[in-house]
Amino acid sequence: MPRFDNEGFNPQRRINNDFRDRSVPEDENYYKNSSQDFDFTPKRNIEVRDNQELSAPRRSDRQSREDFTPAVSYDYDEEQRRLNERRAQRQRAAQSKKRKKKRNKKTAVLAAVILILLLPVLLAGNVLGKINYDKSTKNQYVASSELMSSGSVKNILLLGVDARADEESETSRADTMMLISVDTKHKCIKMTSFLRDSWVYIPAHEGEQRLNAASTYGGYSGVVDTIEYNFGVDIDGYVVADFQMFEVLVDSIGGVDVEVSEKEANEVTNHPGRYGDVVLEAGQQRLTGKQALAYCRIRKIDTDFMRTQRQRTVMTSILSAAKKGGIFTLYKMAASSAKYIETDLSKAQLMQIAAMALPCIKSEMPQEKVPFDGTWDYATIKGASVIKIDTDKNKEMLIDYIYNQDGKEKEQE
Image (cartoon, rainbow, N blue to C red; front, side, top):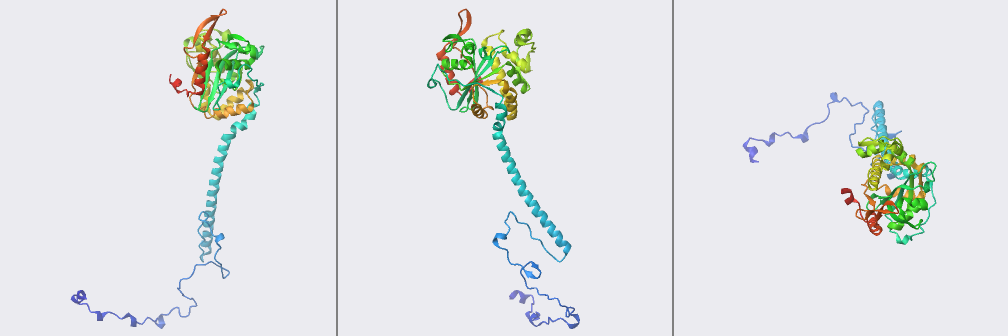
């Protein structure tokens, strides 16, 4: 190698290690009498108990990745061995607690879902048992095949009755007639007010009369029969509420928010005999049940059209409160007012309608009235001022509104 030659490297000067003496001098062999065996040959790491070597664990006894805990490192220090063993026990307990907590969390979520789904069923017996049920009667004046119906729409006629304690409720005239349509196709709840002074044919009377007189001739089912006969929509049943129920319902949600005009406030406040000594103030007000009832009954200062508008305003405010409050608010409302309700719907039908309405209640609520705009005129018949309507045109428009429209156009108007 030229590089070493140039530097004066002499390979003969290297020490020959193969001939070096590695024996320990006698005077330096301190371990010659020791019994220790210093054998540094690598051995298998095994656990010894009572000088017996343990056999390898079976496959079924081996830990899974999830259950793995570090093995205890035994040494000759007994105190350290106990510390290591306690540490391993804590690790196993922590892993077990974590798995249990995960299972408990899944169980809690499942229980919450089941509670939400079953709550209406669990509470139904308590609420539905308080309602007054009437026998359902079939419309004798028009065939079911002639009425428009759909599996995605349920129509319930809400009747507000001006009944006094000493009056037969079914003979009293319907003060409010509002069709509530639960439309699952368009996911909304539609409200349609029927003007009480509309001049229509009443089948039970076999003649024409104001619409609100239908209950006088045929009871509550007579109102259903009359609307079906004139307007061609299938009504699944009626729900009747008197004034006391209305007050309780509004009070159960802490009142309703309504914009009261100066005229409306003066009408109610200045006629205590007519409205039950109720005082109203103009402006945005939160009305109690008694005040809201008086507000809905105003009719001297304007028309029946405005009166039904006020009724829909209060109904919208009630449903808005139900939206914000959720299922427990709905239950509170139902529980407080159930004993004042009368209906020809069965418990099963009420549960079905409630189930259909829940997904729709958070949507906006379109509103309409019958007669529709441009389909009526004021008239004097038999000495009475009434609303003469185009029945065929209103029938066509009502069917289209309930079954075909989503109501969004009406919301924007």
